Picture (cartoon, each protein chain N blue to C red):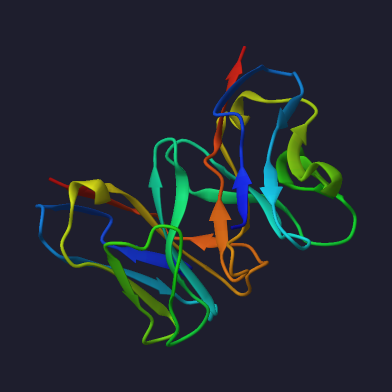
Length: 112
Length: 113
């Protein structure tokens, strides 16, 4: 049972480049989330999904897009990367909003 | 907007001493509240959660938290801290739509010998 898998684990981008982060969970969870972690700011919610085909904005959605075409996958896209998007990105999933979050191992993204 | 606030950025406690980490929340209805811990280089681990019932909840690793509606608080406590408790602690609650979880900014705990 793999849990939540994020790919890639590390990535370096140049300003203006695009990329997609993939999150996959094998627990049949309805809820999936993307957070970014920055020193002193905790984890901030970017976008989330409450089920297949649904997405919603979180606290800091600007500059990111997401898709949940399949229940097990939640993709986070950066269309034109900026240095302010340098961060550690975490994907998480849960069965319901009041249940434990299961986290991926994180993606370290640097935008130069 | 609903939010959780952790007033303390960094706390240092002597090993064996008691610990209390503060969390304040703002909600209209009974909230869902959690405490997570992130050890250096490790992932995030759930310590405990509250959404109804007994206002004193027990968690893993000897931690407990008390929900106090009158004070809008959900403080985390431990009677005797161990060096391995040094980590970053996050209070977590509901996003404004009530369909996602948001994190406080975290409190870093250092344990001195």
